Length: 127
Image 1 (cartoon, rainbow, N blue to C red):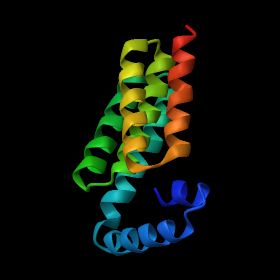
Image 2: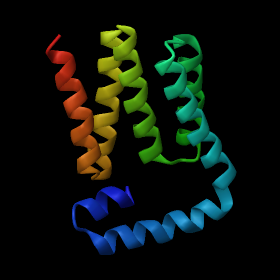
Image 3: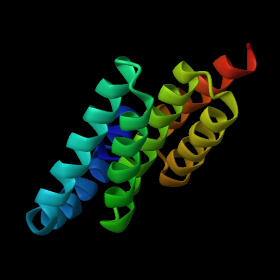
């Protein structure tokens, strides 16, 4: 979220967000790292067309992100899960995951990330 604030010129907002996240991270860093590890593993498994393991990794990562809570990471996981589902040919499920991502990024005010999700949704519409 701080990155989106920075990219849209809200430097003070980005600094406030980073201060909050930094305090939170000192208490939750292991869970955050594990969620990010699972996200990257999900992306690797999807790249290898190992759809079952990808789905499991994305599911575990998202559960951790939601439980923390870390909504930006949860939305990012939904985005990457949606892209993997698209690659797998599961277009309805991909649309659902990408729409979830877009809505959450919009709710967070993370415009560049919401746009990325919207562009992925538009690519589904061209099928």
